[in-house]
Amino acid sequence: MKAVVDKDVCIGCGLCPSIAPDVFEMGDDGKAHVIVSDVPAGSHNDAREAESDCPVNAIKVQ
Image (cartoon, rainbow, N blue to C red; front, top):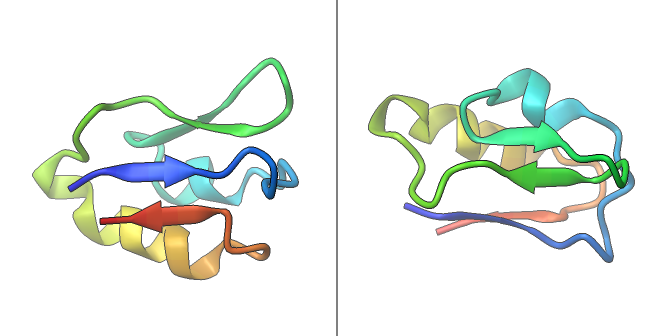
C-alpha cells in the first residue's frame, strides 16, 4: 500500500500526521509529506483514516 499527498491541494492542516505519524509528517514547506515508501501493515487503517478525514482530499492511499 502506498500513500501520496497532492502538495498543490494540501493546506497544511496537520491532521494526517496526527492520525498516522508513521506515514506522514509536516515538511518545512508547511505541507504534509509521506515518510515511507510503503505504508507499514500496522498503519493501513490509520493511513485510510487520514485519507478519508483530509479536509481537502489531498491524500490518496492505494
